[in-house]
Amino acid sequence: MAYRDERLTVMSAMSYTAHMTPKTRSVTIRVDEATDRAMRELQARYGTPYSEQVRRALTIWLRDQGVLKTERPRAATRTRS
Image (cartoon, rainbow, N blue to C red; front, side, top):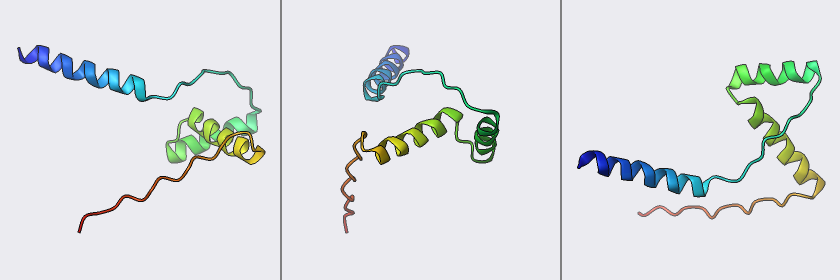
């Protein structure tokens, strides 16, 4: 019986996570050797994946161009005293 309960918990978590992840597309880009070297150096230094570096840079550029809305800042969480 414990195995069945464990499976249901894992399946519930997977279902919840699947609905919460944003939709992404896989694309191919071409970069020159200097850019590739710099990206890989940052990946080695900070551990930030190559694709995440590209996503961050694109997000900043698109916001600067005014075609991507800025996310609203979240409200500060209150602590109970």
